[in-house]
Image: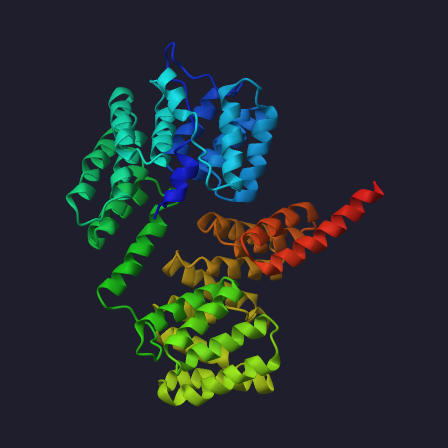
Length: 494
């Protein structure tokens, strides 16, 4: 499902010609047709196409500042985004309005309190036929909590320019801010229908309408529109994922999902436990320990929470006594747990004692039994490449991602399996997809850093480790510090 951050990066900044004396002039040079095809693709969420169009222009004209600017909007990867914006700034003319927009975008990368939209409203006033400036002007008003004024601006601009993407943004201005059961939310529908009417050959209008119904819990209608979008454009990157997500969510809503339950009568403890598992699998280990600890505080007999806290502390190289105390507690309290939990606890302790592989084998059996359990399925691939081999990891991780595309850690395992097989292109693609799916998470950037280490590009590896460290992954800090020393030594030789 398309998220708010994508609009932040995609719909807001870009501007195009309007065809009269009020046209906004961009720094694009030749090949303007490909450039504006990229603009249209970008605003209609055809992101791969947009990146391809802008790259095509840059192959012929490497001085296209606007291409780099808009490549940054089509790229959630913050490291690449910063690279593109710096390149755009270096090529932009000093007194050109785009220069201020590039500077604001760069500042917003480092300070979330700053709005990257300052200046758009004023530019739009001077270029009222430019639908892309109108989108940015709305964003500037939105950042100032002037939402209704922004909606009025969008409506007038959409009626004036007859651009479908403005109706789409107008629809989302209701879908983002109102509960799906309210009449206000339903106001989005007429604008989505306008979008479909204006752009009948595009997939995104149908996909957006699918999201409208998904939010309302009407999964059958949502899936129907997602399917239509996929038929309209088989290469549209959202629809297949959204079909899988909608079907997966519907299983849980209908009570038909096959998942393994864990023994605790405290709902909040169970919720914290599952959040802890998510953080564990995303290598956010300090937070995972905190989550498991909070779950234990709420339910002091929560056996599996003790086990996973012990396991996470092992990854953190904590004292053996700390780990053993939790393992002892897990085994002691397992009398209150289900037979399956007791078996898993015993298997883990056995592996920890004699080096067997009982835990992963039992996890695979249970994952087959509870076929809709994403967290359990991930246990079959997590930290097991050396045990089951990269081919088995690929099989399990790909199957999990197809079932539940929101479970992005599976992409991480796919990437590392391909690294193990020395298929570096596929490894990079998997890590890149994880970053684009979860650009605010630290571990995907750390993994991309490992990829660049594997292909011996220390400079890019350093940039990814540095960003991962900034997002809070302590392991990345150590890697970044080591690489910085190495890079400095190399530079000293020259």
